[in-house]
Amino acid sequence: MSSEDSPRPGARAPRGFVDRRGPALQIERRLLAAVSSVYESYGFEALDTGAFEYADALGKFLPDADRPNEGVFALRDDDDQWLALRYDLTAPLARYAAQNWGDLPKPFRRYAVGPVWRNEKPGPGRYRQFIQCDADTVGSDRPEADAEIIAMALAGYAAAGLARGSVTIRINDRNLLNGVLAANDIDHPGQRLAALRAADKLDRLGPGGVADLLGAGRLDESGAFTSGAQLPARAIDAILAFLAAGRGARGPTLDAISTVIGRSQEGDKGLEALARLGAALDRLGVSEDEALIEPSIVRGLEYYTGAVFEAELRPNGVSATDFGAIGGGGRYDDLIARFSGERIPATGFSFGVSRIAAALAMSEAAGPPPRGPVVVLALDPQLMGEYFAMATELRAAGLAAEVYLGVAGMRAQMKYADRRLAPAAVILGEDEFAKGLVTIKDLDLGRVLAVGVRDNAAWREERPGQVTLGRSDLVAEVRRILGAAP
Ligand code: HAM
View 1 (cartoon, helix red, strand yellow):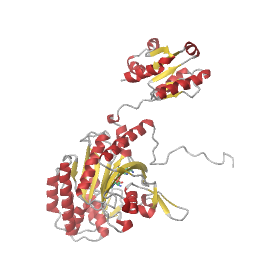
View 2 (cartoon, rainbow, N blue to C red):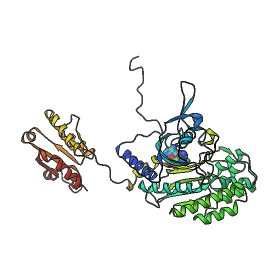
View 3 (cartoon, protein in one colour):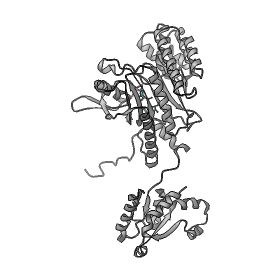
View 4 (cartoon, protein in one colour):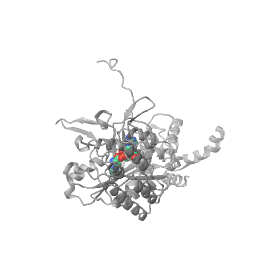
């Protein structure tokens, strides 16, 4: 087949998959290092598992059931078993804990970092591959374990460069809404799930829209009809009263919730858990505005059984852009029992690294752009060996350096050094080489001066920051430039 027969492939990344270059990656790596070290300081141990799991081990817990493979990327192995790329780090942890429970310290505290894949519709801040950084405690049903996870998440955001006060964590407990449903004799699992999903839409649809979804159903602006949970009016009123019970401070919110949810075992369990969680947060130094109790928080994943939490940037925080949540977590006491039958309670949190890195990249908090390497210009082909020797010398002194490997002239090479944000360019021609000299141009200084220099001729005249010195002074001079940089 000739090349004309096969159309050229488009050079394009699939939707929802993002290419990232130096500075963006550097922000992400710094962020991961900062959060990981907070997790380690709380005693969490690192764990790495593979990208694929058997599809039945992952289970069907994603809210997005409309996409191919129900929200995951799956393929059939040569032994006919279905594999799927992990959609989070929690489902693999549940599998790992069930598989190794006998050998693990209990409770087991682990953190994990890595990409996850979701086959969902991409949008702003919604990728199909993104990085999460999680910490979970497996084998403790104490609400204090949830509180610790929340305190640690807030410390993680602060370490990542989001000032304390710019992130809020909103907390709820699934047993509370279940309690409202139980107090109103709603036991059907399908109705309960539909009620949960309706409550989750409070932010977007307001109380009227949620009431429609709890009742007969809702007709949206496009004319599409979503059938409702078919709950009786009494139950709908009780749920709306519950959803409206947020009072800002944790104590008054719990009091307000307890007066509207009615009596039920589940409801009482939720109230007690949140009271203990709140008391622990106080002792962990987490303020009322950093962690609120908010009855309308539901969270999409279906494996949660108790406390749930979601982190958001405050509107006046790093970015007002609607990125969605920057982290979330909760308690999943039944997920591990899927494998072993043994109930092993667990709780944890996931830091949405890709979203935070994107928000940071757009903000002051990202700091100055990272510096490039010193660039040794390649002006004379006879001197290539010498250029490499100089770069090696600089590297041996701990300074990042590279030899220009293109074939352009001097101007283009200087332009290249500038684009690389090189602090300095090293210039060596035949004459200098013969005299044992080398010229070093301070590009940092050049950049500072350029702001005030309008006239091109004057600029050239001044030759800002360029010195010629003995070859043996190379490292000392580059060090001086790096040390003196603003
Ligand atoms: P999640 O809320 O699905 O929870 O995801 C956690 C965080 O990952 C979100 O808050 C968000 O920042 C980020 N995230 C989610 N989807 C996307 C996406 N499509 N693009 C970019 N970022 C996204 C979990 O995954 C649970 N496993 C958390 C957990 C850990 N629960 C207990 N332990």
